[in-house]
Amino acid sequence: MGSFGGVAKSEVFTSSGTWTRPAGVDWAWILLVAAGGSGGGGDTGTAFAGGGGGGAQVIERLMRVTTDLTITIAAAATGGAADTDGADGSNSTITGGCTLTALGGKKGLLANGANGNGGNGGAIAYVTAGTDWGDGGATAGEPGINGIGGAGAVGHSASYGHCIGYGQGGYSGGTHGGAGGGSYGDGADGNAGAAGDAAAANSGGGGAGGGDGANAGGDSGSGYAEVRWIE
Image 1 (cartoon, helix red, strand yellow):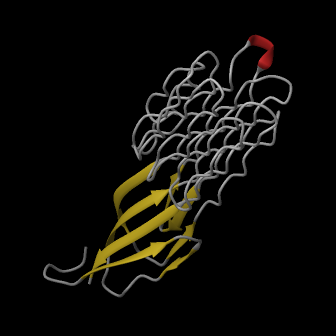
Image 2: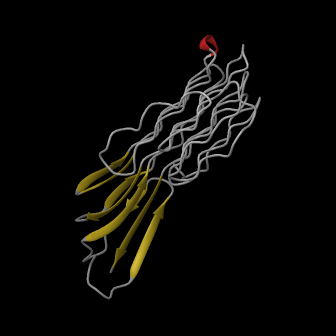
């Protein structure tokens, strides 16, 4: 990154913008986070909860820069209304000389009273760029894996904590919406008989599923980027 003995600098992007390449800087360290998936809604006719959305992909890498960088930060995905799936998270991108893309998290599904299950949690993209999506949603009442949002559940009386960044999806109680999958920050908590919580802005975390009944899923966390260099 430029000459040895230079000054380390950084710029954070919580919304879309442009990084202006200083003269003589040929390399930059990039952190890029997409938006998580939002939570699915609860079932209006039965006591079933929606699934949590998946956390977004996080990419960290050294990147050769030959020009200014255009940085597009994904907006949060809106949670699903009652009886409605959530929404997939959008990608965040960096372009300029080459293109770098972080993939959005997958949506949480609406509660499915027909077979007695809560909604499935959305999947997360692994941290390493270019890999496949994680496995599909967790089975109702079981924890998510590899950052997958916890599924809405039936038959369980306890509700456990949300997932932490890069961690597993949370468990869900019998009436609680599934917790969102973790990303750069935490996924959101599910609630009993109430709307799912939204993930924090610029976290890439998944939104929680809506609690049992006519309750909406939570919004996901929006994306984030950081550029570091030496000049």
